[in-house]
Image (cartoon, rainbow, N blue to C red; front, side):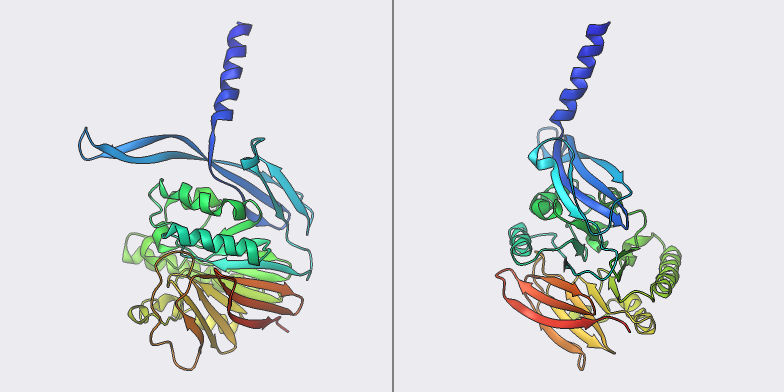
Length: 356
């Protein structure tokens, strides 16, 4: 009997050791004094084809491993190890308790042209030192395709293991369950604080939010109500940032009438003194200044670039079709924003100021 138990224990250990990390490890859902470490493992695969003799399309079976920690000290760097290997090690820094300086980056639309996506990540690692990342959506081309997620995670591996990751839901994720599981996002919209700044992540993908027009309307109204209540509750914050996939304005001609719901939220941006909004969806860089609020489209993470044409008159600061990321350096009452190309060139830069 002891021999059987010993063999079973050995088998379990071998099975655990044989698990292949397909995603992460990474820190998600980092809020205040608690954090979740997630890693995705590959447990076999399945193949698909149109005939018995041509079963040639393969997709991995992915499982999420996660553990949570609480009681963390503010402004401290923590190190973790999920399996004892180099691939399973990482670190993250907790939010500061006050107005200490920190840095974060924003980028998005990484769904295709993987070689470009790799260059963007390499540039982030070379030209910035972020404590966390805001991804503006469209992480992959099809959130239902399990074969695409390991590619995304492989490209972002060295970045993810050093930061906390906060993604917005893009239309190409298609509201798939894997997005919620991988990033431990309990709801399609959420918020968090970092130091004296408040961040609100919205779900602008109304097309996939529900299956009927009435359900979509109910979803949007519920999110709008939550958004206003969250903004009200954050009025003591020095900065308020909003992140969503679809922008309320654009310099891409064929999409200039495409996001009326997001455009309808702009009065709330003004009423509750939003500092800046960051968006994706359009594969380029756009910067607008409207009623004292900065609106930035950062969709140059790898997907095919879109031409810039007919930028909105009177509010356009910069609009250019280029791969890039945005680096934001927070320092007390001033934040410096820079849009940086894959070669390190500064494409645009401007300052933000704390609310008085």
